[in-house]
Length: 167
Image (cartoon, rainbow, N blue to C red):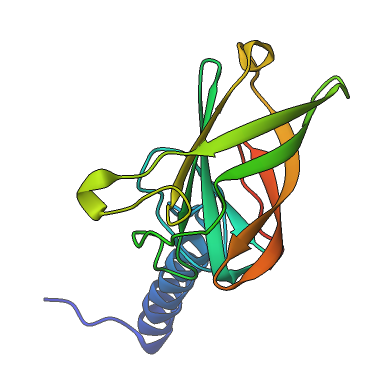
């Protein structure tokens, strides 16, 4: 077995350090499954297949939005990494001003849809739906409104399909 020179050993160790450094850099820069389906500092999961939109901030909570044909579905869920926990709101309806990609503005009213298995009722519910024919074939929109969330009226902003994250 031949012995390696000190220079050869140095080159091998330096190469190993460079490979490890590149692997760390790639890991830090690679996209992760985040709550907005793009890079984020914190990982959040959607539990209904929609996109997460922070209610004021990610720490306060989220509105998970999903568009199915002419129906917009919104689930109110916890903040940070508690997106699997429903947050009930006292609203019976939520009115959104929806701005489509072409700039057209429409009003959409979402009604409370209580989960009876979770003993929800209208006025104590975490899930809402709104339907409008103009939602059909929409791929992208922004919406604003207000919701009574965690004890006070808060502004909500929905950016579909990417989600809203002010943090």
